Image 1 (cartoon, helix red, strand yellow):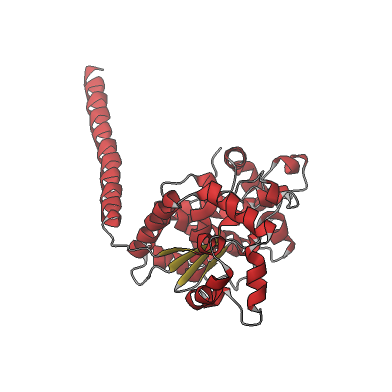
Image 2: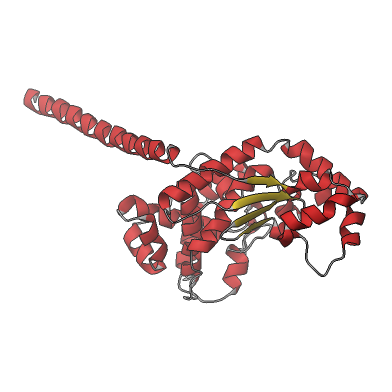
Length: 329
């Protein structure tokens, strides 16, 4: 009995030491990566077109057109822009943006950190020139990213209860907050490196969005999971609490390899809630299929050692099979 107790104590000590090595070894590796990323050179060029236009006079229009030709379509006469300078709605938009963002310092820091992470994981990346503007609240085009240019419509990030958004559906307005700005930019980048699946199964599209969200885990490690997916903290808690039930619903309903496009509208597309056809629907957030795809990809990356680029190219069914995914209970 004494020998067994002594063995148990020794085993317990060695087990504890092994666990500590795993934990602190992982932390050390994470710290090393963070240190390397912090040293990535990044020189952001941020142009505040919104402020330049707000402070312009009619005589400044030709110079602004020369500096920002992509913001002045040729089919519009100068009189359009001159009239816009004195338009009361345009003036209010500019004032509200100025109140919300000020000198844009906090957002600039967040974008610099994001671009450093992108450069670390995707060495061929070149940071685009950033131009901030007002867009008459065109929320579907609030972020436009090309190889050389990032346009940010700041009037789409004034907070979900701002009076500019009164005519917009609540589930859309909920995302019009500056806490989601860097997450939206990361999504725009993800769409440039992720190919939308040709495979029409529900699983393939779940995992596509799961890869996008896992990219944010790597590119935006300091923001909350709720910010990454565009949820409130309460919606995030709902998804985590009901993860097992959702997974059972998908599996038992044989939905994973189903090619019905209605599943996109029910579980992947932006919506006020997800559509399980149950009483709990009204309590649920939308896009829960994306959340589930995210958890599958996370499980896969925890159980496999591959690069981020390799992950992006892997088929969904292989990721699921090798993930050993078990929903949280």
